[in-house]
Amino acid sequence: MIDLSLIWFGIIIFSILMYIVMDGFDLGIGIIFPFNKDAEERDVMVNTVAPVWDGNETWLVMGGAALYGAFPLAYAVITDALAAPLTLMLIGLIFRGVAFEFRFKATPGHRPFWDKAFISGSVLATFTQGVVVGCLINGLPVSHRAFAGPELIWLDPFPLFCGLGLIIAYALLGSTWLVMKTEGRLQQKMARLTIPLVVALLVAIGIVSLWTPLAHPLIATRWFSLPNLFWFLPVPVLVFICSWGVIHFIRRRANYSPFLLTLVLIFLGFSGLGISIWPNIIPPSVSLHEAASPEISQSFMLAGSLVIIPIVLVYTFWSYYVFRGKVRTGEGYH
Image (cartoon, rainbow, N blue to C red; front, side, top):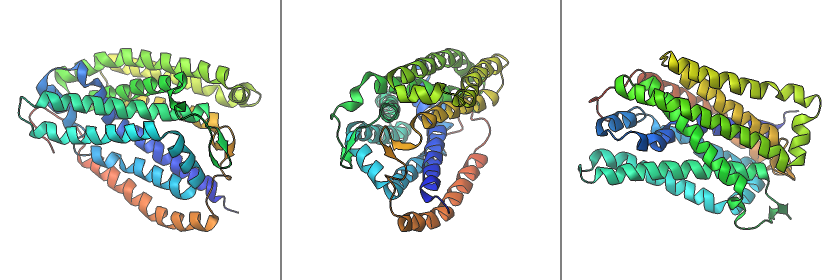
């Protein structure tokens, strides 16, 4: 018998991962904007994502809609518990989007304001996304199918640190994306920025990897019990290999390898999240099937998704293919 809840969980995970990968370097460009004061180079940085940035957020909408339809209990609990950071995330995304468009139309005197808006919107959206992830790892108390925890649960130190860690991860995605998409002095600046970002991300991953099992005995048991330990051991090894690879290829002035290896790093970190919360969709007590909607609802949604998702994937691939290659000074906003 087909487990529709498991299929929908896979669709949601896929949508979130696609969003992190595709909007991550977009937000990352805003995060590393303060490290480059040159106005022309800032225009080039934005132009590298100008043709594709608004389509990247399709995956965030899809993941949220899928959670609402397939796991309404999880949607209700998460939006109740994390209403503040989710609202701040949306404000950041909206403000970043408006600033993205307006900075090209602004007069020279007003452009610094929109640059600051682009930076602050990118940082705010990224930080709050990390806070939400940290809260899910920490767990949300549920009683009688409703959130039963404190209103400011998201201000716990662990979620706040996860917000900082995601800022570093997105900044690394942004810098390696620009290494791939630019050339000359701007590419060299981004290459120099990438190495300390890799080190900072390794430190952040190490702290989270130690903090999580120490704070949650159930997660520690899952990670370190046999035979699970043998299955999970390759993850930290691969993290170190990919980090070394990014630094190695940056020093060899490679274009594509640093970005591709950073994507692998993000995937490895995301897999750690899945390992930590499985089989719950709301740790520590609400399982996948307990939060699921009726099978007839999941079946109805799945029929439409099997049509929509391939179309979105084809469109996404085509848009990135059309705008492939280097972006140079003076090419203008697409």
